[in-house]
Image (cartoon, rainbow, N blue to C red; front, side, top):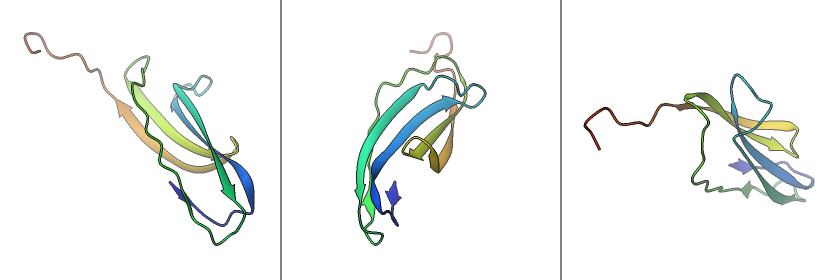
Length: 88
């Protein structure tokens, strides 16, 4: 994620939520960011592993400035990962 036009320090908060139930995020990670010059571009790379989704369905990855202002949102379809009978 690349952001610019900032004038203060803050955080980019990444959340993965069920599109039908946003009350409890599957994942919540906060990254501090210093944007003291509106011409500076801050690039954020977040590696996430071993996320346990409670059930198949449509989820959303959200990036929020200081947990409030939406920066970006992407849909994440989650399917049942159980292999068919007889396949390992």
